[in-house]
Image 1 (cartoon, rainbow, N blue to C red):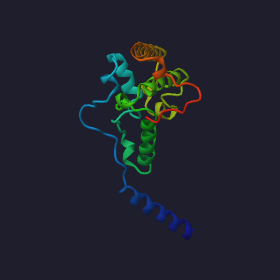
Image 2: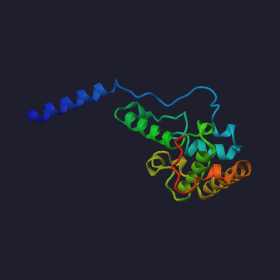
Image 3: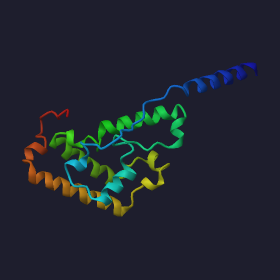
Image 4: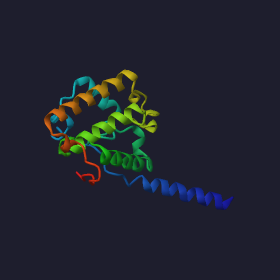
Length: 170
């Protein structure tokens, strides 16, 4: 019994101490000059879809829930956001080479169609982020229109990697 009490006391102390170690929040003030909207038209209704279902993990601004103030949850969320931004960051989209932009749009379309994005762990808590069939269709149409505009602007060999060539890092 005493051992259990000591263990619980140690765990409580550790829990209290870790509350003082917080990750940096993903919040950037001001305009985002490299946002996807700076290079491609993004209609307001598509911006709304991106804002509710994508931007918390795929932009430079995350809306944090109240439970982000509790460790170790904040560490988990920070890692999740960083991973999402590594995969795709709509606020840095203009810095990507056209080939990467083209590919990321294709991947976005596929993942949304297959129900892989937004993640179930996200929509479980953020019910409004769950996309309706109409929203998925709207997003797919916008992606396809944007990719078509890219095809008209750039030669296809600059958008699609030839087989056997290594992928670009940028």
